[in-house]
Length: 139
Image (cartoon, rainbow, N blue to C red; front, side, top):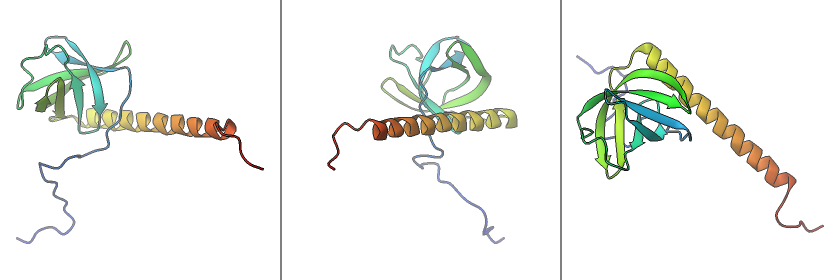
């Protein structure tokens, strides 16, 4: 059987599968222990959490868990199945494992919204620099 010319195969060892965003205030609640971890970055394919006190000894490569994502004091989404991909010191990389279509859609929208806010923030910072130059311009 001939290979489908429109198929795309991604190697498992690829560095990045999706654009990652950083959003202060995002936390992951690990189930069933209920511990909270700061989210270092987030994408539509996975996330990285910080475990500075090494509380989650069970978070070793290959381990499976479930998480909820919180923004400030509000639970944004519950019950995301994840698998630990790697652990490097206090950084734990998690990949979503078997999301529902609803969960995938929510994560896509969340990442897109964070990207939009970052673009707006950069535009505002750029326009403020143009309005208030730090060096006097020669005339």
